[in-house]
Length: 625
Image (cartoon, rainbow, N blue to C red; front, side, top):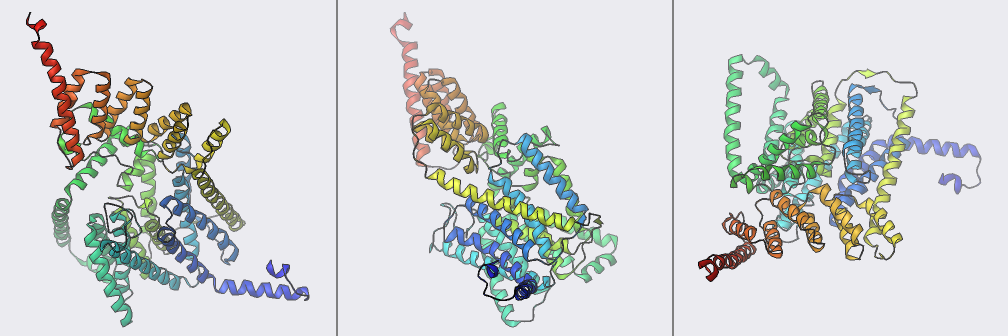
């Protein structure tokens, strides 16, 4: 296009030749363009987080738009035809349609919620990766991509080391080993993926370059040290499992297994089971509270899954439904301190399989498992497919202890590894129309444009919303409510809007959004704000119900009990004051603090005061007469 805009006076045939030459150059360098985009997928989030200091949601939104842009450009510069449909594609299409229907009918989130676009973006990215891995230079591209991943792992490890040494600040007040992540578990999981890639380079590719051997050995030592220091047991187990897969995928290992007698296989299995039991006990003793807490989450989640096993509770409903179910669980009957102290408010199930079953139902989980098994059972073993299998196994194991879908970097590697696995899998093609290739490319361009438009619109409107200060007229309120839709990253955005409206004098509208936020999230801090408004408006019964709910959502905390006690003081409900004061004084302490000492002292003072009133009534002159 630029050639035609600024073309000098030459015959038209020359422009045809120039364009043909350009297309030829691009076709020859196609794999380099693909490599550039894949490298950007890993590098851009790191730059945006550390150098630009964007929040996690903004980074993910930008990357979804970037995936869309890549899809559009890929259609433009690729000379490859897209492959025909297969059974796996039909399965993925079915899951996507079902998920969208589940979202529409059961979810309380709207289309502005970024996670919906993120999940759809993951599917889009998987098909783009599959397309990329059909180039002639695919082996070179795969190796370079994994070198880039190891390089990013090194940068993350370096950042975490500097955080641990207090040279730079971490993104969390409670943890140091984070890198650009929000949790040590996610950091360790990402470094663990780099560890597996290095193991592959050493034992499968068997690199002969001495310089690479030295660098790789130093990186293995650094990664191992940080993985151990992170105390991420899920990562340790994932590395163990994927390493076993790596070793068992050798040709001589498979031949050896075929020759071993049934008795030896039985003894081997018994030894393996014994090792797992002993290791599990040791890992449990390392962080028993963490294991018990996740066990409680799984227990209550399974009770809720049984209620709606097929359709689930709705996409993005876990935080609200689980915490509400937990409140009911603790209100039904007295529970042991061992359960109470682990019952904190959670946003995630810490288990991808439980989360999928909870929100989408067992049908979707079953279809996913069948599709994955279909691909794995038809693998053609090559060096690259073995690495794909190891990385994917790693994430499948890690998904038992966390939610990989929450991390952009981890999921991107997982999607690439599964696309790599898929590349060397023989699946029967399904006939499609002659124009299928064109139709699919039009679809990719359409989806890409939709991603770019939606995500850029979200970023622009969110920024405008954050800087919106004029709230004086009804029109201002309408504009603010409209803009707030684009900030629907979780239910707390409604609480923010409601508080903003309430503080600016629009109490009815403000109360509506705070109430909606509490209903969507079941979050205690939103409930407390709502209860205070109810108290101001003399809706004491509603305030009391919210405080009791908050107590059962996080039964080990003192704050909700003190809120309820203050309400009883305001209403002068003597018997309730005495009963709750006694409870606060005698209630166990999970983490000692000066604030808890103040709570207990306050409750003790109230108890003395109201007990003395009680004693005067019983022992006064009128009582004696």
